[in-house]
Image (cartoon, rainbow, N blue to C red; front, top):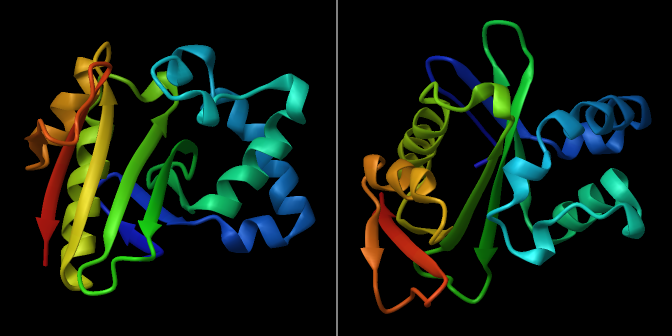
Length: 172
């Protein structure tokens, strides 16, 4: 799944953009508006942006190496509003397991964009056949937990830890 749309959003893989030097530079220039300290504060250390480790360019390389990343753009003005990260478990061949993460720029908070994005993902993933979607949420980020619940994800106490809650949804 490398492309889908919702009413207000166009979501597509960033791979072609990373291959074009000028497109990649444009993307890297836009990412600081998405990867703000407030947007990253509830995420694990591996997803934090560090100026000591090459900054944005290094962060992009690391994400591209470990997962599929989709750009989330406004259909109204084509502005970048966020990122959707999909990390598949290659050992699960019968029913793919996909770990879902997303970042939205602070300008998009409180507008239902996250809920629309995750509901769109659920619909698009269901069209590709059976899959199990997982989303982890820090205990201090209840808004993200509500987004997953609105999209039909169920809480999994077995997969949760003292610091985070795990949610899952089977599609297709």
